[in-house]
Amino acid sequence: MPVFKRNIKESTQKSTFLSRYTDTNRFTKILRVLLLVALLLTITFGTAKILTPECTEQRKLSEIPLNTRRTPSLNDIIHESQKYLGTLPDKESTLPLGIKEFKTSAAVSKNTSHPPVISPAAGETFLVVIDPGHQQKADMNPEPIAPWSTLKKPRVSGGAAGVRTGIKESILMLQISKILKEELERKGMRAVLTREREEVNISNKERAMVANSLKADLFLRLHANSSSNPGVTGALALYQQPHPSLIEASKKSKTAAQIILDIYCQRTGMKNLGINEGKDMTGLNWSKVPAVILELGFLSNPEDEVFMVSESGKNAIVKAISEGIIAYKNSLD
Ligand SMILES: [Zn+2]
Image (cartoon, helix red, strand yellow):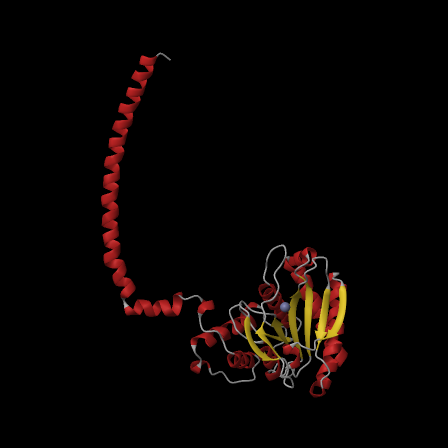
């Protein structure tokens, strides 16, 4: 293109651009005024609303998410579980907010979501206290590993995480425990969870106290394993050591561990790594009732993890464990 033609073209382009720019500029000014008015209105009325005391009170009660409300204590959990099982009168009117929430969730799962086949009176039907291992945050404060020991271990350790999905052991165990509770109730047993949320702080000893106070027929603690070697795979079970104060319970624990692990591995195809005494397991040592830790598989092994996190895997796991519990229960009769 010759130089002048190009100059003409460029100048035309410039003038068109200028007129457009002026239009846009006017429009922007109007928009700014409108925004300013809107901002003033928001400040005037919005602030007044936020500062109203009822409003802040309402925020306290309804807008704060459940998981930031008061964490239920051990006594709350025991008390609520006893009420759920029908062994305590209802004292709801005296309960603070956090505990009421706990009760509501127990009542819902009992009465509406998944009604048990049998609605048993306390003490008549096999009771399993399920402990979903770990919790959202570890608590490294020490507690004695046994009533007879001066050795101490952290109240709750952090737990493993999935090598593929990164899922936390505590979350996965809670998910599986909730399905297991429903499955056991469907099969006519009673089941109580030591925790129904991630945001709790209940030590391993305190979890055993829940099982003790409810006189559980079985205290089943669910965990997933981890190893620095990703090739390590399989499930194992730990049972209470036969300390003189735990002879009877320990015998039953060993039987339960063997039966439940064998059936679990047969049904899920998980490699069977066998049973062992859980000598330094605080939650087993403090339990006065038969207690077992079932390590469902390795979160450090991709295949085990994929199986455990999949919906079909979780269902297979729950079916297998419930079959195992029934077989153990039948072995007692
Ligand atoms: Zn664990």
